[in-house]
Amino acid sequence: MFDYVIVGGGSASCVLAARLSEVESASVLLIEAGPRDTDRYIHMPVGFFKMTSGPLIWGYQSAPLRHANDRRTVYPQARVLGGGSSINAEIYTRGCPEDYDGWASTHGCDGWGWSDLKRYFLKSEGNSRLGGLEHGIDGPLAVSDLQSPNRVSLAYVQGCMELGMPFNGDFNSGRQEGAGLYQTTIRDGRRCSAAVGYLKPVMSRPNLTVRTGVTVNRIIVENGRAKGVEVVAGGLAERIEASSEVIVTAGAVGSPKLLLLSGIGPAPHLTDVGVPVVHDLPGVGENFHDHFSTDVTWVLNGPHSYDKYKKAHWKIWAGMQYAMFRSGPVASNIVEAGAFWWSDRSEKTPDLQFHFLAGAGVEEGVGTVPGGNGATCNSYQVRPRSRGSVRLRSSNPADEPLIDPNSFAEPYDLDRHIDGIKVTQEVGHTGAMRKFVSAEHFPGPLVKSRADYEACARAHARSSYHPVGACRMGRDDMAVVDNSLRVHGIDHLRICDSSIMPEVVSSNTNAPTIAIAEKAADMIRANR
Image (cartoon, rainbow, N blue to C red; front, side):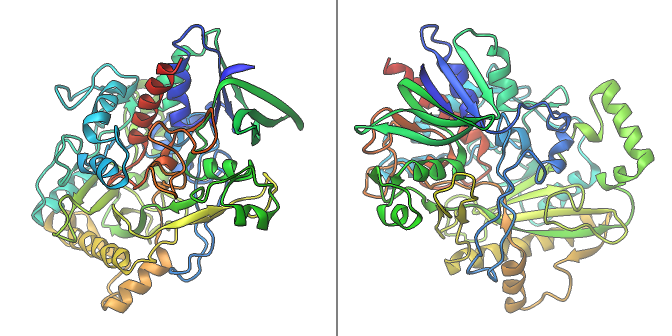
């Protein structure tokens, strides 16, 4: 028996394990289905390109997307200690203060406005350049500038400025609009995941146990109280009890899946798949949404991007530079530059985000370019209106869930998505970019009409790895957790990850997930 059983080993899990184990009298168990974060590519910043496929993800695909040609798209979800922070592109953004104020004002999430969460962002952050009132400098999560950004990344920023976007040297200052270089969760040329920043320094604590390679099949609920979890380790079933709380941190897909497998969710769906109903909670699995992006790729007029390091002799050179100095291409996250801008000027804050990659064919499902030297930029609307679901395929825990973000169900989302593609293309035509770009490879010059752009988006849009919402926080009948992240109707059970977000933030989601966990840790400790 443990006081706290944390299900999942992702970003939020690592924060909670570190913070709760600070209480010497509390015993904490963290359970992760995947392996420890020993893969060398995790810790090399450039290794991101290896992480959107392979053994450290669950291998999920979306359900057929009804508004995107019934395609099934790749849906990478981490299966390794550190979760998304071990496999993501290491970009550190928080979103706009207005995002969190909207959680409080629109969804009744009192205590989750910007003034409430800001101190947790600062508490988590260890920024090597910025400080003052907007940034933390001593937190466990290292945040830094890239050492030597690629020259095409700099040209992208200049191209955005040619179009009228201001330069923004700090996307987390409270003013998001503009173009610039992203700060990253990198320290001394190595990835600083939540596992590295939070968990590794405290692994020797006698009251903290971390088990990897262990799958949780269900939460054990007796008389309306979460008593523990049923796990499978080495092919054997095992019951682990929690005297204080079970805390589910299995991610935007894994958390709703686990609740459903445990009989907590909409009764009609549970009955359909043969799971006994423990607690009829209709919001579990609903409100699922994600940032969906389309990639524009360019052919470069020379070996200017990181693509040149795909050749053996350049790869050896880059490896030597990294081994000796922790610098060079291997110390880059590839996704170096970006921007936030408007497609709909009636919005108070920018509604488009852009990620520029100094290379092509970096991510699973995104192709290379003729000649092998390319660059990529993806864009998405940051506040999608479409809502989907996460449901069970069957009562078998080993079966892949049905993941349906239902993207483009709302025509407004498709309109703004197309605006993002067009802005990206305009940047490619600027003088700064023409120094390096010989041609636009995709979508290319044949995409001209509105119908062409719509067909392009429906055929090629994909997840940008920011799923949220399927266990959302709130006070209405479709909310899953209350403002203390306790599951409605079940005692001693909380959820703490991006699935509790009522709406996705207008940026990347890892930093907000870590801040959520910092706040949750304080709430849980206050209950002891």
